[in-house]
Image (cartoon, rainbow, N blue to C red; front, side):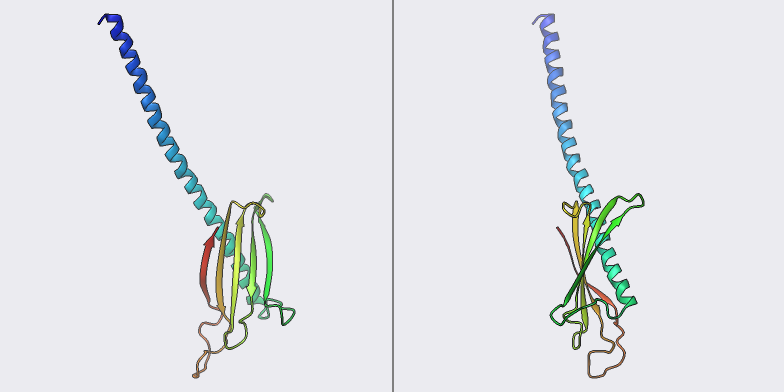
Amino acid sequence: MSRYGQRGSTLVMALFISVLLLIVGLGFLGQREGQYQAAQEQVYFVRAKALADAGLQDALGKLAKDIEFPPIRSVDQSVFSYSEEMRDSGGQLVGTFRVSVNAKYRDLPYAVLEISSVGLLGDPADPLARVERSIEVDMSAEVRSNAGGANPNLFKTHYTRTNSL
């Protein structure tokens, strides 16, 4: 083989190795992109969960101020719902929470309120993340047994579920 032919084959081999390294590098970048997207979705989930928790705390605060919360207007109504927008210090919409208080089992023998809150991150019409959190609140002033006495679990909360959609 002539000297010029060896130079040509070396150039072709260098080009082939460069293309191979480029393909491997692009593969690693594509894999990283998926990891970054998964990390971003986890951040969205945590923020939406914080919004849902804010709704639960808002409802518990209203219940602490007014034992008759929620304002059930008729015998047929057992669920009370409301929502609030959360904005940052610049006035930009961060998200919303929607709270539903189910008072169906408020009276004895159950004396339990079920409070659900849905945190929606971003625009409520097209949220970046959606998390629902539910709790049950013990409303019985007395222990539910024949012994009676003060209920040590009065106003204690029990998380029943967390759903993300």
